[in-house]
Amino acid sequence: MTENKYKITINACFLAYIVQAIVNNFAPLLFVTFQREFDIPLSKITLLITFNFLIQLLIDLASAKFVDKIGYKDSMVIAHFMCALGLVSLTFLPGLFSNSFVGLLVAVMIYAVGGGLLEVLVSPVVEACPTDNKEKAMSLLHSFYCWGQMGVILISTLFFAVFSIENWRALALIWALLPVVNAFIFMKAPIASLNEEGEKGMTIFELAKNKLFWVLFLMMVCAGASEAGISQWASAFAEKGLGVTKTVGDLAGPMAFACLMGISRVLYGKFGHKIKLDKFMNLSCLLCIASYLVIGLVPNSVVGLIGCALCGFSVGIMWPGTFSKAAASLKRGGTALFALLALGGDLGGTSGPTIIGFVSDRFNDNMRMGILVGTFFPILLLLGIYLCKKEKARNV
Image (cartoon, rainbow, N blue to C red; front, side):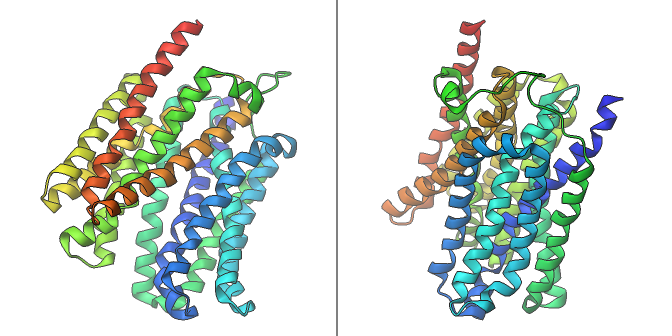
């Protein structure tokens, strides 16, 4: 009976990850359009991604302090309205400023606040809901980001093909409806407490003194880097290797990656009770290492793309699996734990692609060399799983 009571909360959390996928993936589809319409250099427009990331990092860090004071329900509602406001602002702010780029930047910063909050809030809200298998619920939850990412790319591409890309503002307003609707759902949804009644969550200082936390933090950095290291370069890999258009490259690269990542999470969400999380994560790390090696060593572009898709399947469990291990290992972790883990994931999400890009550049734009160096991340994650198990056994 209690589980049924929280079904609306879990479903709203699924939608919240689709909202996060919208704010992270919609604007990048319009970068060339922004360049043409507002006469902004592409080098400047790519700064929008950097600012989106920086704001989300700051929110990850700050939320450890303010979310508990505001409350999860109110924070979740604020996050959704910020996402909606940012998307709506995209349609008119560039025209209000003499420098259109400033208007775009402000809009991105508004929805980045919402996206950063969602990243911190959604996982602990689901973790707190009374469910039979937390790992399964967490894996299924994170699959919705993948489906959201695919949906944004497919629906937006279809909309632009039918109504022309010049009408992108109308689509931005349509996408803004989802966070508004979900905000009202969260107003009615029950939110369970992460901690037992009367129990206080761990502080950042307490977590910082805990060895197990640092192992888990390292695992989150590696999970984010392993995932983003390939997903961010998959489109370029498809375009350069196969000589296809950007649209086809996006479908062949990031779409295939996101699809298999989502399938991996759904499979664990459905059959997770039949396989131990550690075992699934170990096998996933080995498959990820193999995928990186195939992409880096096999000169055939089609085989490289298959490697990209398989990498999507392999990284599926890494992020939600680490969240689940952290929640089970540090029972009093609370908001600070989830906020810092989100920070670790975001650090990995930027460092992975950056290191791969830097190494590729040093080897005369040889992307394969960069990806080979990126194999370090799943190897380190594999070591982290072992250290986590060892540290937990020592503390028993």
